[in-house]
Image 1: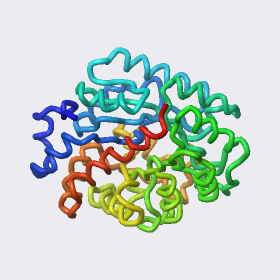
Image 2 (image 1 turned 90 degrees about the vertical axis):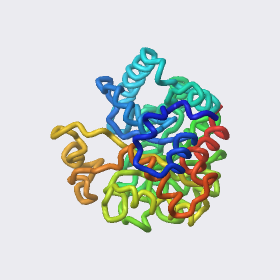
Image 3 (image 1 turned 45 degrees about the vertical axis):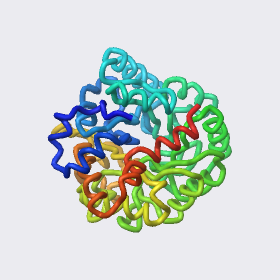
Length: 344
């Protein structure tokens, strides 16, 4: 694999060791979830932020349970149109091998994700429809209960019959089953019911930061038993000491690796570039308190680790004694393996 996706000049600006710079530039770097709001007006030129950090693959949120399914379709249409107009830098991927081809061609690979199953409008056959539009992972519920299962900030109702039918469809068409933002009872049932590896695209260990959005060791172990991967989230509210630093990110990455092995940990930053005083991330509880309860800290400004910290993560992992093959797994190899097993 070549390192064409990021230039030598760009890599030289990273404030890391030479060994980390070389490894990060050469490795497949996978960010499993971007956190900017899905809306047709979003200027996707912001994705240059990820490219400058050496990111080779990014999953972009195109809808979540707060929005209607019609809005999700509009978001996808707008995003696809933008990528069609910018073919030199980006590739919408369908299969796992497309990601490796994009890196060789110096492009960033893109796929879509859905946060919650309200976008299915109560119909399991919508899974195939969204898969054909480029959605490659979907989680069950976004903080609150829905027709498929329970949310992490609700009285978790558990996996429903509809949710089980959706799992069957996701496994059939080749879409990753994702348990981030989902309640404990529901996730444990999902991890038992799925016939393919299950992921937590962007969730952190509750052992290091007690918060309703984070997950307990039992969930992490159950995910690993399916062959899945836990993507560590970069939002400070969910990180140790509520700090979105490179060190707190690395602490979470190492915790999961120590608990279940390096084959089952990756990165899902959930990063959204700041948009000034009007940024809705300044107070999510004021935007929609039922989905983001103030009691969970959402009334505070949500600082997030930025893509620019990814080369630093590579450097810190090497400094903590990780081998280059293990760092490569964490940066992207693990999620690529799951995609190779799941996507069709």
